[in-house]
Structure formats: C-alpha cells, structure tokens
Length: 186
Image (cartoon, rainbow, N blue to C red; front, side, top):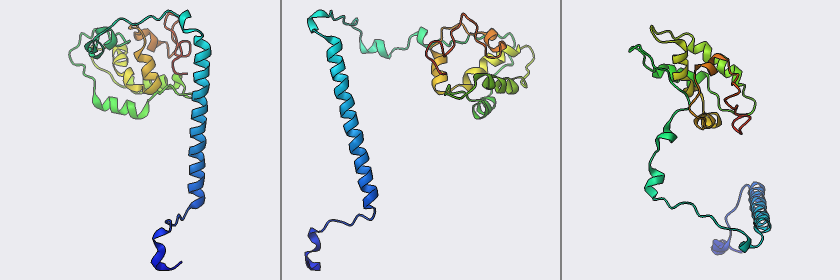
C-alpha cells in the first residue's frame, strides 16, 4: 500500500488495551442489565398470574395543579420551635456556615449520631442570648447540621420533636421512632 492510498486506513489507537477493556466492561454491564430486566419481567408475570383475578383500583383523579400546590402539612417542620419572648434573636448565617463546615450528619453507615450531637452542643453552648433559652437556640440551629439521608429522615417525622430530644443527648424517646426502627439512616 502506498501513501497515496492511505484514505482507507483506520486511525491509530495508542491505548488499544484500555479501549478494549472499557468496551468489554460496558458490554458486560449492558448484558447484566438486560438479564436483570428479563428476570424482573418473569417475576412480575409470575406474581400477577391471571390478569382477570385482580381488581384494578385507580387513584382518584387529580389536576396537575393539585400536585404542584404545596400543602401546609408537607411544609411543616418536624421540630416544634418554642415561642421566644426576646426580640433580639436572629439565626446567624455565620453560625450556620460554621455548623455546616464542622458538624454535618448525613446518616451514612459508620457515622455516630452521639458524636454529632456532642460536636453540635460544643458549638451551640457557646451562644448565649439574653432572654432566649438554650434549647430554643439548639432547636433553631439543629436542622442545619443534617444532610442527605438524615435530612430526609428528619423531614418525614411528624411535628413533635422538641427540646427534650436534644436534652437526652441523642437518645430518642420511645414515642419517637429512631431512624433505624423505621428505615431511616443507620
């Protein structure tokens, strides 16, 4: 072959082995996904059985506006903030930034909720405001220390977490299910 006929040549791949490995890996992942989908379809068919044996219950028809409208029950915080008679209390953005940098609890495996509360108390106990009880300050800042699964778990709680939970040092009373008991972060 001469240089004048080089138009039919494929471009040179400098890293042939890596390209081949990546291609094989992608092919294996695709085959595994297809196999899993086939198994799920078989399981669904076995579970459903004869379609005439099941009564289909359709959900109540709602407009799109219903789903887009925020309801008060969905927006309510699970933490009950006490009334603060003092008018000199403001949630400080610098304290929130410090808490998010030093005391974040995500609910991941291996994270200790007790050490999270200890670090939280170490920082918050340094904040004193005349006429504002310490537990009121704790309840205002506590949600800012949670992210991820822990924040999602907190947001699904009914509105009844008060200052007694924070005073227990992380031990959740029996009336309030722990995240482990109801499928929240471990």
